[in-house]
Image 1 (cartoon, rainbow, N blue to C red):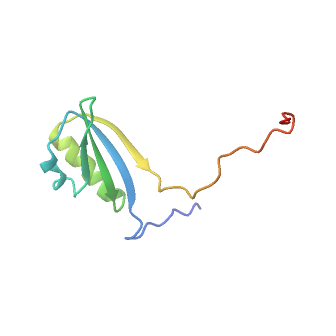
Image 2: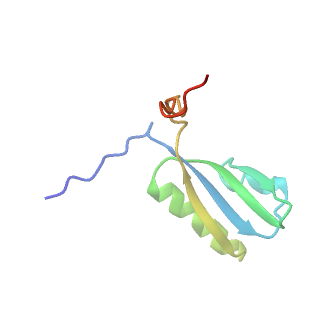
Length: 96
């Protein structure tokens, strides 16, 4: 039996939802306070947190009700811890 991860009230996830067409910023309240950004390519990007999968599905239902084509839904990972991406020096390339 596989145990499913539990999601509590404080475990909100951030999403980016891209729609075809431009929405006016007044729609932000209807989308539960998500940030609306009108992109130069003619799309609108909704960015914000969904408390759980049910809330995400609720947002997607609103997109459907507007009749705008859904282009993408992307889960935005929280900022990863800062780690060095610097590669160690190549010993075969001695600086002389």
